[in-house]
Length: 625
Image (cartoon, helix red, strand yellow):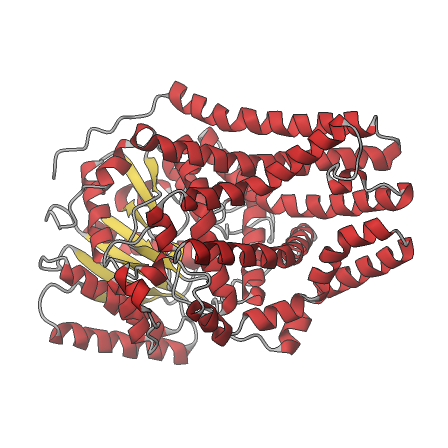
């Protein structure tokens, strides 16, 4: 095996300083906001007044944490190599050639998926490995099926036979394909991977875990393997996979937003966590021996939804690896790795309900003995990212009631309607905290000609960002109310089903949208009725966008689920990302395999840079799983 890379292990004192540089400003900002609120409006009167102030302090603490992640990430980005780990620095020059010193299994765990689409992506990854040279014997590609439906399983077996024939006809250098379907899918995906480690693990040194919608270049796979070979203390390397490849208007907006806003937060995450990273469940490489010996999941006390088998298993597995002394690393800018995302609001909300239950289960995991403090924080952030939603709903309800009774918007308007220095300072601070993530991200992109070009140029970027923000004003109330309801029903005992995900561009019917978003319609109607009853003009104007967003949620779902609107937006150079302006060959090949080749205009062709995708998630809030 190659000589180990001399990694500069971050000292405990250094990591503590980095973490305090995020924690202390967050708490100071929240405390300042509460103090200004007290100065502007005086000591709270009665239970309602204290409730509003406490809820304001809690939501401002969370928003301050989010805002400071972006400022922290911007500063860390400016410092460059001075704050990067030795592993990340090495990743920029490590060869994309097999060393011959290890064997790797690329695992695709599936459950009732579209087998044709899954195997189409496998062909793309296999050809990408073949282009990198070598015999192909260093990587095997496994399809690990948990499908119970006989008809779907028959399609999987047919596609496996086809890909074996294809591999035999397309020359040397292709990886070997292997397929296994379990008799009993105990433990869902986590159990699937565990059974692989037990059955096939001794044949391999590493495993690259992929989802059914994952795509990774051969160069990235082999660079990850080389990094693992050279860093014997590392048990897991997590890459950042950005959403790409879908055409609905909703998907294109989300793909654009994540590309624009995630990089600074992810840079912050990598800088403060050091070797205490987390696992997001896919598009990562793991040391099989370390995982098999240390990452067995506990069964939580009690019954579902909060007890039983752990649903969001990945972050727990990462914490268990770290507990055993293995480094868990993040490479924010590795590139060459993608995933897909829900293509409409209805499917996204369904995924959020599942993730909510999984994260609430982590309340029973945080206290596991021996976990690193950072691992506990990763778990807590995932929990808080959902608990923040009911806190926001409660704050708006309490502050709205207070405003209706007093005739003054007060903290509901963050001090914007107040008088005096304290109220003005509160308004300035609150607006800054709420706007900072998006403004810093936009400024970071605008500061670089290369980054602007990746989004289609300055005009395209600014217009797209403005439209995305307008749409987010409508989406935020819907998603917040939904998440708040998901938290409440989880604690009330509702158990969600973890069925196969819908991954295709899917147009949502009106009936489905109205039925599945009935909660938003009810809350919106109640809010509108209460505003009319209160008869306060300024209160009505302030909360009217929230009521409108909730009442219009079904039309939002239906209209944004249209792929024709997404393609028209792309033709108008809206919501472009580097996956449009500098497409990797693998994405082009996958699009052709699906029978859809995106049109690229002359300006985009001039920016095409095969194999060089600019990949710099609300990472600090556990957005990836």
